[in-house]
Structures are given as C-alpha cells and as structure tokens.
Image (cartoon, rainbow, N blue to C red; front, top):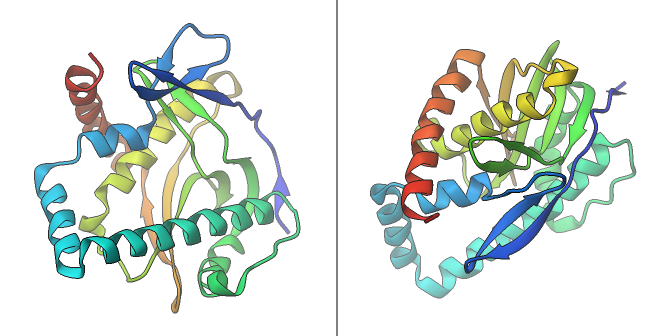
Length: 226
C-alpha cells in the first residue's frame, strides 16, 4: 500500500518577459526560466544536428506528426500517473494502454508519495517541475516519467539526467526547512510494447550532473537572458 506523506505543494505563474516565457515565484521579486527551456536553448551542436538528420530522414511533416503524437501520449500518461500516485481513479485510453502497462510495475514499487508535479526553484535562477518525489527502495527518490517509441541508450538521454539533478538541488533548497534530502534519481521511460526502462542515479552521479547543469545555466544566462 502506498503511503502519502505530502510535502507542501507550490505553484509558479507563467509570464511573458522580453519576448520569452518565464516563471514568476509567489512572494519573490524574480522571474526565472524553466529547466527544460535552459537545456533546449543550450543544446550542443551535435545534438541539434542529430535531430535535424532525423527530421530529414523521415520528412519534416512526418517528424512533426511523430513528435506531436509522442507529446500527446506523454502528457496523457503523466496525467494518469499523477492520479494513481494521488490515490485517485485512473482512466486509461486504449492508445496509451501499452505505455501504462509498461510503467505500472515501476509505480507498484512506490512505497510513499511526498510530492506530485509540484514547482521548485533555485536562487541560481531556474524553475523546475519534478514529476514526483517518492520513497522508492527505502530512499527519497526524485522521478521523471518519459515515453518513447523505442528503447533509449543511456548516453542518448544525458539531458534527462541534468534535468533530474537540477530538480533535486532546487527541491532541497525549497524544502530545506523540512530537511529534505534526495538520495536517488530515477528516469523511467514507458514503452508501448515492453517493460519500462529504468535509469537510476546515485547521489554522486546527481552531484556530477548538477555541476554540468550549472555550466549550461551559466551559458544560458550569458547568451539568452541578456
């Protein structure tokens, strides 16, 4: 049985500033970009080239349709995962049932739920939206749920790990007075026709990825946030 040991849940407001969208933090005189925006803006050239080659190989319109379909499936799966973790009824549409069956064994191992889809932020200048903070294998674990058409290799998804690392540090700062320490990271990738992939991160690995994220954050603030 999943226990609920809920942390306070905070919201941020999306606002437009200088032709870009940022997040306004209640009670703070600041607006910060989101982690995914930072990672997208600072994506290395080789990653952009790989995306371009894929778009050319399948056709720009086909690539757009594939991306939109995947995004829709991911959004709807996230909604059902959040409902499940919150102890609410789920309603799984037929077209995402394979993804649900893929991720359910991961969800079945959740021992307690601390936070589902809350907002966190960090004084270095970013906002994040972790999918869940849970107790998993007797440790506090920050999770990110993903969907994919095909299995991923670890070195293809390092931006996911940077995302986890940034969320972890922000969550620990926001909930510092409650003594939150995140021991573990988990990226679980639901696949339509096979068990979900689980990529786990230890504390030292998350610290390493945090330092890498800081470099990307500095790059973002230097070039995209003038």
